Length: 57
Image (cartoon, rainbow, N blue to C red; front, side, top):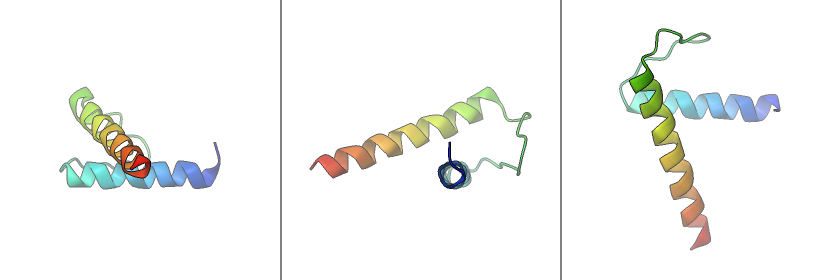
């Protein structure tokens, strides 16, 4: 995966985490609970689906 894509994905993840009130630190977030990781990932997927559906209209 190219660095641009990886960087964009990380920025997206950080943005979602911030909006959910979850603190991510640069690098390893091994202390992140499974619940919080799931909330971040779930919200990312919801936003990607919403974006895709908007483009179909």
